[in-house]
Length: 133
Image 1: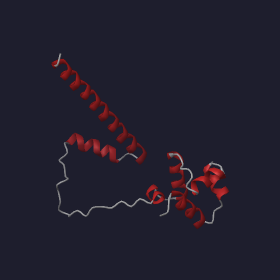
Image 2: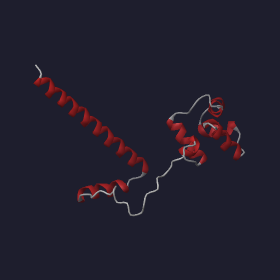
Image 3: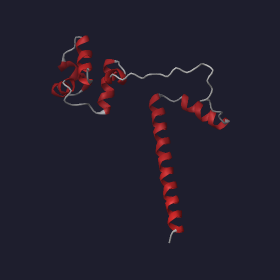
Image 4: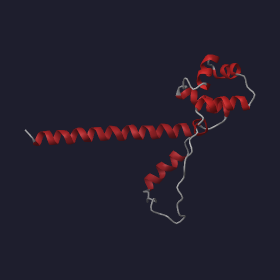
């Protein structure tokens, strides 16, 4: 099974590029690129993103991830949820954001949700502690 580095090397060779030229374009050393291609090291997330953009491929492609989609009947409405007007308005704002800002919003939502859960957990713990002297 091919690994990340194998796919990376294949992309470079398919384009008849030299390691030193790709490394220069990515602002890394030839030695670092070589370590990626030999599956000795893996790039940071930022550099990984830059590599995907450089070769114009998805992260799924580089990592050889196949997402299997479930077949859903066209009339299956079990996942539909009625939105309030306020929720629909917020969703429309979200949909107009670029991908980077959508990621940021999702991240903040998760962060706030986890903080809310921690506070709730602490409150529940305190209530139980008060009941048991």
